[in-house]
Length: 356
Ligand SMILES: [Zn+2]
Image (cartoon, rainbow, N blue to C red):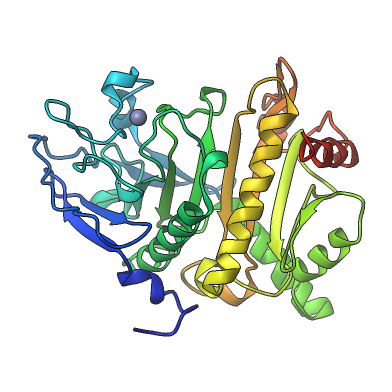
């Protein structure tokens, strides 16, 4: 046993690592003891195509990953062919067990990984119920998922060449999900992505000029503003003053924590419940649950870790019942977002959605 909060507490508790047929690693994270996860992968799988390549654009400073082999990946399969549903006699998916709580495994069609690109892509499944969603997970499962995310954040950051671990989860073909079974992914990039690098630069400048943490200062200001959506003792969820998306919520701990491994288990549990609360509000904004992207901002693996401040960021591109926000000329050509919904209005709608 090791001290909780270091991340080591999550390594051994009710988790089992097994190999898949093509050599990838899959890890079961269980809600509790007493689950047999020894079922072997009975498929015969070809070796994975790992021909990704990372290229640097000297003009924009962006890293771009070339992953042409992903064109052939599974795209919106029928429910009978869902690769993320548990396996059953005569029907073998990615997860060998006949039921599961949380599993993580390397993506069969990875954007990253292999000798030229470096890095790694993992899939995270948090329910074996094909028709469920994150917003329906019980608290016990949220804690298991937080354990899995914390474990993978730490372990992937230790891989050679990995500079940033990006945990995300989304829903809806509107935002590009190619599998309907609820799931998230983790990209372990061999570089610090542009948006993250820019935020760290802003934090470094702030510290040099004014001292302290830029994010802590923003959290303090937003906590007192009219854009707060929900709060708990130790976390606050708000629509940022300069939100880029029609409905966009950031969740921050009040105290300076650089990532999930920096949180105590009870803090992680509190964060996950607030996260679910925000997603439930997104479910109630419109007639049908909104498509969304949710991701974690955490410390990079290398230098500058102490500049970072953990946040969960959630947005939907839906701006009205039947209208989506597209990345049009200003956004895609100039990188300048134009938001049709005032953040103060979005916050009011999201507060109201919590009473639905
Ligand atoms: Zn499924």
